[in-house]
Image 1: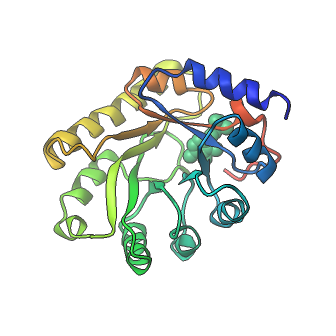
Image 2: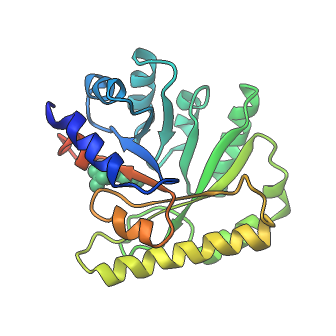
Length: 226
Ligand SMILES: *Cc1c(COP(=O)(O)O)cnc(C)c1O
């Protein structure tokens, strides 16, 4: 934990202007979040709805909480009153539920569409082709309580940098296509979330403007559920 502040500052310094750092605090205690908060960090990412709610309830109100993990529709209600950005919209059903719950709370909730480009079978998300067909659907455009801000993706967990770069390149291409041909340059469609501890430099090189970094800041997690 003594290294946390130093790690955070090193990561923050390594980011170009215009790239948002989401400090991924999943599986680390609220005290660790507080320490990063005291060092100036305000944007945190969590992967489990109940864990997020518990931390939200005990930590400062000006934290911007992002949800980055697979979100089950029956868990949406725990985070919808306060979540700032949901990175992991991976089905139309989930998007509809977020819209419905956001309406109940009188909110418009920012969301990213999760795009599946990695080779791993287990990673959630739309393929780029599905993404294009989903967003051209009329019903999708009529949801009043969600605002699609961009896309999120994870690359394959591999040492092969050319493969990782190629996956990020595909996501950037999709992002650009959506921005120009679907959102017609609408300034609110502006977020490309890609890059984790092991690959964020590559992701930024490919155009990412939001990175989600956990272990480089907080150290290894106690247990992994991915
Ligand atoms: C855990 C997680 C991260 C952070 O991973 P690190 O390798 O610890 O930086 C980023 N994005 C998602 C979706 C995650 O689940």
